[in-house]
Length: 253
Ligand code: G
Ligand code: G
Ligand code: MN
Ligand code: NA
Image 1 (tube, rainbow, N blue to C red):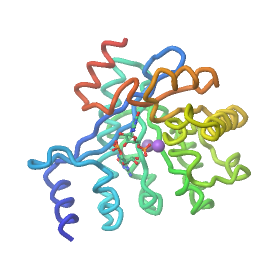
Image 2 (tube, rainbow, N blue to C red):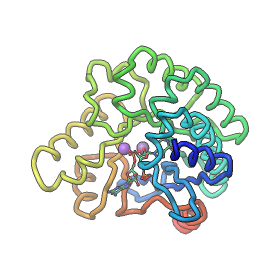
Image 3 (cartoon, protein in one colour):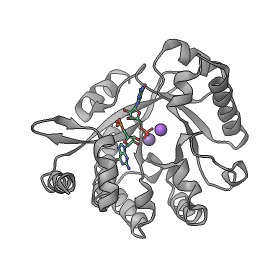
């Protein structure tokens, strides 16, 4: 109860903030876009991490107004970054709770209209487990989003027991390889085999693959050898406040 009141206050007092982690072409090193990651500004604790409040936001339903704010703010910011880099894409995480909300497509459309961001420049991340819990509804939602022109990705791919026979029916553009596989990839054979399998699967289904949690040059070199398309991770950059991201994007143009 205490945490939910604190969350409510954070929303009312405009203390939500987005950080942005670059997504990079693995061969050219070019920034393609960024994943938006929410934090709460707190006068005592500094920034509160989403791991500490997303579960409560989901339980209380506050994830709905919070998610709408994230969509609006990420689209507004991406529209601004279009002036530095044409075609810049912002990726937004969707909670399973948002996927049950009939108003979600309207919230997305409102964010696009208000910002005047091209739909191709907004990517929505669905977790693999949210998709598989609710296949028929998600298919319908995804088809609507694709008709609008959005990009769709599957987050934490490899952790959620996707049925491969279902996967080919989903209009998804990109698989995000879960960071646990990437981080253990060079330590043992199993995780490397999983990463290779996901990249092959992506190629077979004409989906882009992005490796998450890339921390070392060795991991980057290995992923390049697999023809993985993109990377995201501390090796290139941590999630950054918007002003720092603007500097990085300007510098790399
Ligand atoms: O950097 P990181 O600590 O930012 O994120 C931790 C977790 O919080 C990740 O699983 C991430 O997907 C989730 N997360 C970050 N921002 C959002 C958001 O805007 N909405 C939802 N639903 N999850 C988010
Ligand atoms: O669950 P999701 O993939 O949306 O969230 C991404 C999470 O991974 C965020 O918490 C983000 O801060 C974190 N992250 C991003 N890059 C790295 C990395 O290279 N190493 C580690 N350990 N975490 C990372
Ligand atoms: Mn994500
Ligand atoms: Na992920």
